[in-house]
Length: 245
Image (tube, rainbow, N blue to C red; front, side, top):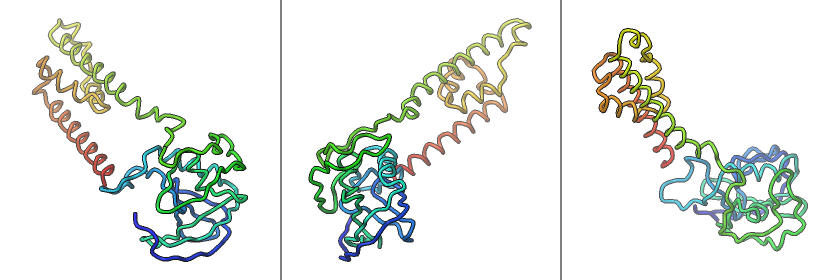
């Protein structure tokens, strides 16, 4: 990302700071969004443009850590330059300690697009409820998130469980279909089979159709299952497109 278009040094007070990500700041007493000088934090999903080397790490953890440092505080800031997009690039400090240095020390950002004089930052006060920011790290190192994203970690487990359950449901329904009259009354509703496919069991539903020769031509079930699969593929392609662009 190119910087250093315009040199413009101007000191100001920043009240009620807010942050969209780990290197962005907006002040309650100023209208524009600004970028913190000489640091680069992980980009929010969909913000890393193709061809750009973006800082790895958890963007939400970086943003939340920065918020915890500045919440309810009044910062002393100084504009250093203006970037390619017309945003002021500012250096901000609290009680004489640079918040960009604190972000690097906590492993939520790296030094980039400029130089920071962080020293030891030995007097920086630890933000409540977050990791100690006073132990410096190497600028290129990014600490792993303190709390893993368990939601994404559970996705493969969910897909395994729902696909096993979907295949089993098709097998049970097939067995009941070829059984006696009493068993036929205990058939699994088609709406339930379609719901299981819709929440992730589509691969198992198609596999069961072909392997068990069950509901391959039953209408409108077969068409509805194809529509569900098409919708899921469309959503998946849209998510991939957002992640890439």
